[in-house]
Length: 219
Ligand SMILES: O=C(O)CCC(=O)C(=O)O
Ligand SMILES: [Fe+2]
Image (cartoon, rainbow, N blue to C red; front, top):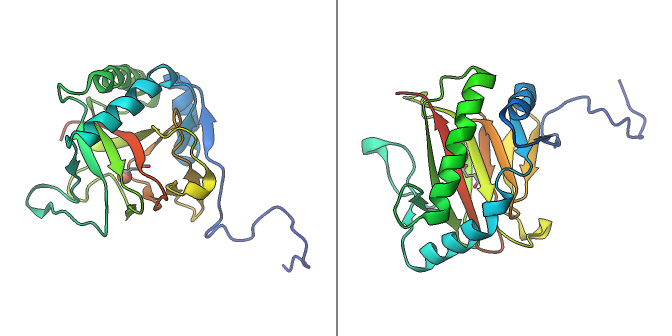
């Protein structure tokens, strides 16, 4: 049916439509409810009290050279591939990560709540700091590897004060219905989504810092 040049507010075809991602408070029941809709939600207030310390620690560790170029794939198929992903990372169980390990404990408590409220067999959490230099990106991908379903949920917390839309660096999540949603990597924002959803990191004008975590089941 023709729309005669006015905007009905309803897209006839969802392909490439941008959609707002659901928001949730930090408790696991609210997060589970929000995830049951589209499979992704922005979580308010989960790590506001730790955000400044995490932002400072990630920059310090990056300046000290503690982060390693991230890899694509697993085992023998792992390789550095700057075109696919340009970030460097440090796992939070490293003794150098003081604020990082506090966040890891908080995410482990959240995992217990989500195991109950989502009835998912979450067994463990792994998390790393990530640094994307200006211009770096991460091409469209899924966090659940083809040969293993061990990553159930992905979570990313952002560590960039005063970030603006024209600085770029959005996380773009692609939903099953063809719509997509963007998240700006602003300090204190965090997002959780099903690891099977495709997503990408758009290039940024500035250095971009984050913590990425995965809620896993046993392999
Ligand atoms: O930093 C982000 O927004 C997402 C990072 C990501 O997709 C990943 O590390 O797998
Ligand atoms: Fe990812």
